[in-house]
Image 1 (cartoon, helix red, strand yellow):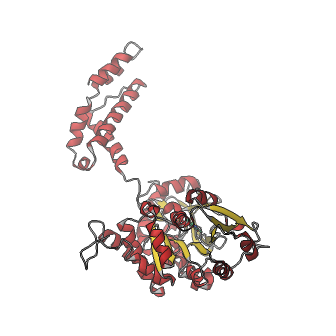
Image 2 (image 1 turned 60 degrees about the horizontal axis):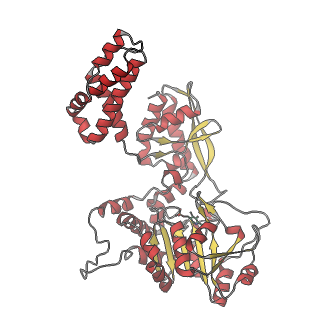
Image 3 (image 1 turned 30 degrees about the vertical axis):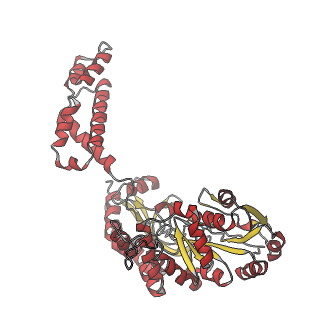
Length: 480
Ligand SMILES: *Cc1c(COP(=O)(O)O)cnc(C)c1O
């Protein structure tokens, strides 16, 4: 009450009508709103501080309305309801599950790869206590990478494996631990920038390694690498040009010749393949992403890749190669700073286990299943969606057209996958209005907006999400 009286004081004599003064005096004290809120069961789940902020803001809002000339009396119940609504909106978790109807399988803004069910289960199972660094046989301290390390080695055909927080981190770590203070030779055509702040020259700086650029943007020959090697050279680095293609008059040495050169000159060959195309490398229609095993087989001492791109697992940076080098990497203090948490490790281990059986991988790893979806299957689903959406209120038109889904996540640049999409037009609403209505659903539906059209692509909507998806689209079209 004190506060509203103070405000009343400030504004009295400024030509407020008697009605307004009355309304201001009628505003309840904040504790009355809070008392009212505490009697509402559903408010219990919201932190008292959040409720108090909401009540204060609601009261301020009511006061501002009155000062603005609206002298409708306000009752404590109405203000409490308003405050609760505000508090509820604030209480919604910032990060939520969304339905990805963009067709972009590795959508970085939507969390890249959706995890396989067994990986989700594994992460949840260890969320409490687990034997993260505890050996159940000896009862002594165990290896944190004891599950993931050997699996990774097995899958990559390497002696040893380890993993950290992401591939950018793995690159810094490997360069620092194995090449720190020395020179590393890279082709000018491979000085990539991936997703904003991952620029290779900057990564070198952070790692404390001297970058030696060779060749030109389009042509680098193995002789260029050879000519740049000095007694101070620690390694040759190949970086997959993950998010662009240099086409036309272009030439880059293959892994075999780089492996051979490194062997002859007694230096390391580090292969950053980015996407981790363990399964796609075996399929014709997915040519273009390097097979991490090919680099290792050709003589790479260490290979690096992401866990949440074509591998289809959680965010992580995977490192595989010679045992002594992997151990050296694990002993670097930066390894500790970049280490994976127990839930990610469990999810990664489960994902790697599925990869041991390629057929299972294409079936059970959602990112692969989505990439492998056939055109017929996608067209059938798009047609079903269209037939279910045509007759509902708010729809102006629904059509099914052939389109392309970009793979995303810096994979297969310029190699979009053929798909079928549903274009939805809503009566009297722009593409932006409709896509925004879709985002306001629960769970939010994320669509593609292309040339003024709202597009939904069945590729990335799991069949188990379909009912929920269609219900949400109907709500959005009905203007809810
Ligand atoms: C994606 C990518 C990275 C970065 O990987 P993150 O796991 O996102 O850190 C590094 N190198 C290449 C070649 C990539 O494609």
